[in-house]
Image 1 (cartoon, rainbow, N blue to C red):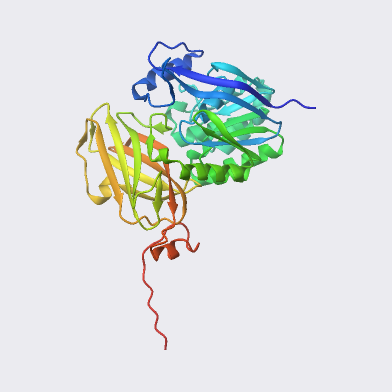
Image 2 (image 1 turned 60 degrees about the vertical axis):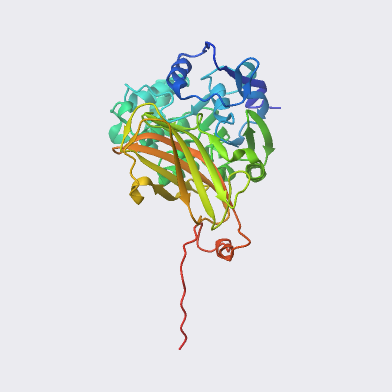
Length: 419
């Protein structure tokens, strides 16, 4: 009987809050030093010893050739698990055994040396996986063609845009001869055509018998690609089963629990200069509901807290609403309604109010964005989700839930004249 590709026993990872930390990897120490000013101490705290458990008591086995989806809220422990499996960080307790070579894509540019060219980074990453130069040369052209960065191949990676970097990183991870592939939210970056290419390539890898762990907020992609799915909550696995059942469980727990109305954004996936940071998002509905639940056609207020570490002049604040595939349905920008903010130089509370939410029934996601002179200060992907439910007391509900015309209802009138 063949061994499992991945075997995890009683795995746990905790981080001390207030005392000096020991680090197993240099890059983990550097990352902690950079991110420390932006940390929140509100994540699951073991108060007596001032520790937070990012993962606790994880038991998991993954069969060879299985494609496992991993979903859950921001900060639930998904990325920490992949970092341990990739040997980026070490567990506090327990054991993770990987039977096979591993390639991983944890975030944009992970594993790249910024001062090396794209060409040099291809050889470097492949060498780390244990491939010899002849094997690398055989895959080289496939990697370049897939990544679509051929004309920038001899440019330093630090000069790449985030989209170029993730295209090259995914191409390397997907084309090298590893037996296990770890992917963390790769579809959050890149245009729609590249995302389709990624999905097609991952399907091809899965059919070839490769073992894949896929972390994503893109739930339709999880359902399409994965043969099995687990749901993380507060550092623990709370569901393990078929993808459609896992997604249904995730939706139901999102809707039914009342502690989801305010989202701490300290551990969210983000990019930007960091001069100011979104720290909290809260959704309130009228009429009020528990959790992030809003009725179709009713009012939704989005409250944001922003912490300024440096002055941001003439900032633009934007909120984007996305569907489950990651497509932006509509956005709201302070400059579009001529509500200019002269400066962000202290802690600020912001509210954006939508008098009548035009979305049909379903679960949607929110991105947050601060820019200064067209430069990104803070961009938080999937900062929160909101569940839109029918409004039985309003005739608009009949129009919002008929299933015709996409996801958004636009107010309109019809006139008929028969002759």
